[in-house]
Amino acid sequence: MKAIRVHEFGEPEVMRLEAVPDLQPGPGQVVVRIQAAGVNPVDTYIRAGLYARKPGLPYTPGVDAAGIVESVGAGVDRWRPGARVYVAGSESGTYAEQALCAESQVHPLPEKVSFAQGAAVGVPYATAYRALFQRARAVPGETVLVHGASGGVGIASVQLARAAGLTVIGTAGSEKGRELVAAEGAHHVLDHRAPDSLARLMELTGGRGVDVIVEMLANVNLGHDLTILALGGRVVVVGSRGPVEINPREAMSREADIAGMVLWNAPPAELGRIHRALVAGLENGTLRPVVGREMPLAEAPRAHRAVMEPGAYGKIVLVP
Ligand code: NAP
Image 1 (cartoon, rainbow, N blue to C red):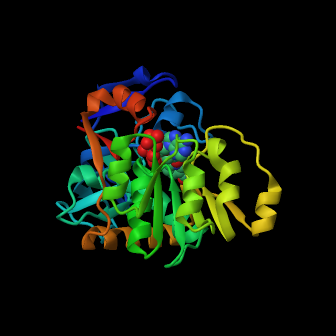
Image 2 (cartoon, rainbow, N blue to C red; image 1 turned 120 degrees about the horizontal axis):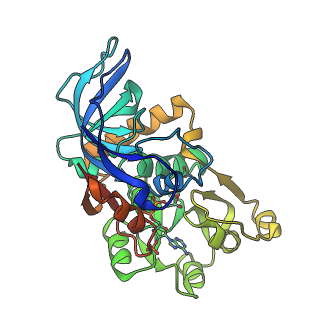
């Protein structure tokens, strides 16, 4: 089979399409024939050698994918060859024609969800769910700001929050992104590049502020976020690309909480609950992953540059 291989950490061009041996499932494992693989920002940090978790070299990048179960190992009773699935993590990497997964990393993909959409589920939707409901403990009737709503985690957060009965304010940096955020269910949409966006948010909430913020770029926004929280508000730091200065008094006066999260830290039982909820949402149509761009697997280097550019529009997926 063909797979993207990385022999040294570095620029996107270190990713090359190569022929590698076909994968065989061991006990408790599933081999999935991949139809589409999701591109996440974390894939670029790992490839550059900048991430805390470094795989042994050479390796195949990618966490997310969707496809068809090809073969199962001894003791696997949940899956049979031919099942449509999405993959959230694997033991072999997903930028490839096949992925080797533990049984628990494979989840059912309803017929009405395309493989490209399935490849957009794993990291973005699980992160959004954990941020909103396990870290921020958002409840119906509250107001959430999805700060950076046009990308993978952002669109997932908007759809999940809307379906759960929250009032949703989403931001994007481009007109096209703002249209998408509105179409996917945000009640209000703001431009995170506009200097008056936080003042407008306070107007929208009648001066009260928001209960929850799902923050995609904390190094830019965290200090300001604390000033637009309602009493008892919570900020979940999902993304941050550097340090930031905050005024702790803003948190004190609001009895506000700042919660960090990294999806890999979710205990197995909580991860299991997350995927149960996501599969239910995919089945009933409240979760509709948005694929902005599909690219051939060989163009992984171009996809890595694109995912780090401004003007996000849903997900980028690679097609083997
Ligand atoms: P993505 O698809 O590339 O989207 C990035 C988002 O950030 C876009 O909506 C973008 O908006 C927005 N953004 C850009 N400038 C911003 C600003 N000044 N203020 C607010 N938002 C801004 O990436 P993603 O997959 O959604 O991931 C988002 C971030 O979360 C990344 O840093 C990623 O590494 C991180 N992440 C963390 C976890 C975790 O477990 N903690 C899991 C998944 C992702 P425009 O392009 O419209 O400006």
